[in-house]
Image 1 (cartoon, rainbow, N blue to C red):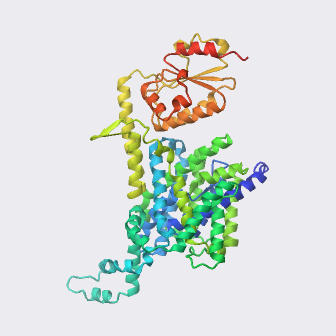
Image 2: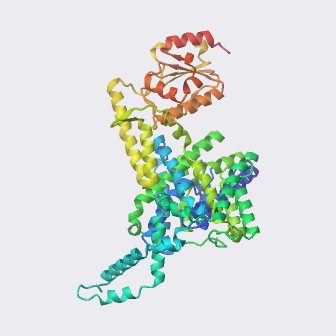
Image 3: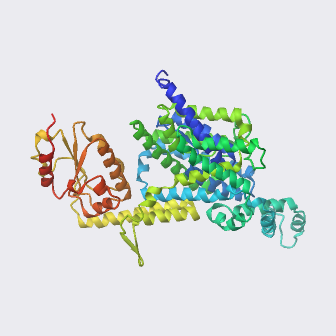
Length: 620
């Protein structure tokens, strides 16, 4: 217990700061998901607290994130659409999917699957993250200009004939189930159809209008009409929010600019009694436990959503463990991936029981926590408690926040979440495949397939298709390379024959590393451990690359990260026998010559040894 509170001051400050950063995002993600701001806040409270308490990354702050919210939004919209557009009716099914996703994460951690997450190739992650950014950006255009399709009477009226037909179909289905419907007598059907209330038709029409304009394609379809019906006050609030989010960062980064924008713009709108649209009311008091999720939970009821829940769980696992790696690099520690998955699963499971949307480890919030002094799991727990205090003490105040302000914050999130590093690399990557008359990079192909399918069709299937394509292309490349060089030796680190006569007096100053196989998305994690293998006395590292026939984009960036770290430590790096394909990749993004000058690349070990004898002196 004493060890638990050993860094109490730093953890308290880090947790409170991270909680402040999380507040506007939690509210915004809740609104974006379709369940309302309270769902985002509940998710942030419970996931932050329990994922920290049970997880395997002491400094990680968890909660709703952009990728998890984007997938949740699709899940929520789909289940609501199949439940007559009634959120209350659909809620038990929605929360059951979230609960199942949490249980799957616990199972993945318990079975030791955490170590396999590294096999997700970079182009798939890059395409997915950029698609998330596009989805958020496009879907937040309508609320940022104050246009809500289901409130556009003229537009909604177009769906009334379809609504009447749909309601009639539902009546026929009910009668068939009740045994009322017979071919000879439609009296009961005619009676029920005649009793249709205008309110029911109007409600169904609004549901159809909302469904028709959901997602990227739906938003783009209705956009011309929306532009003709701009609410200039809402647009001004959204633009003001965006301006403050980016502008305040130029003044200081110690105070979260999103929180400043939220407080300032909301304060002005409320203080001057502007006629703006507020977010849904946040219930006061502690969140209620949804017993119907527990009592009604059965595989039969959620069978159609099992694959969706598994995908949501895997996405949360990837999102969290990537953030764990960031935390490790900042704190020089090592997280426990399986324990982290169990913690995330417990957090998501508990959040679902209280009506919260699912989440994962949040990179920005984790970085803020570490920079503010957080070092133990207590910081994440304090962040959750801090958000609970906001809910209990400031719930009625938070309910006055303009919806356009949260839309503005989400627009900045969408811009920030896209993978610009991967996008910038598109022109530089080698065009190693041909589709008809078009030549392009296989890495780019994978990224674009995931990006386009995720943005316009289905996030879940897009990732699966991307993984299949990446696996097939990788197997083809490795098969081709193996056919060319069939004398592959076991991966065992030992001195090669031409290293036997290496001067013993320089062995403390020079560290020799062999790479004996392709550097691809499945081996990058092991390669990144290179820096930890180097003795403290070494000032020069020789990397022998004669058996590294192939390097993919993931391996390329892993190599870049290691070389940057070594340069920061003042260590010279020498390449020996660099083959054609890896050299081409490294030249395309300027690893050569920016990090490795051409004079540090040698055709064979003997010429490298001569350079070492001339330039490396015994310091001991």
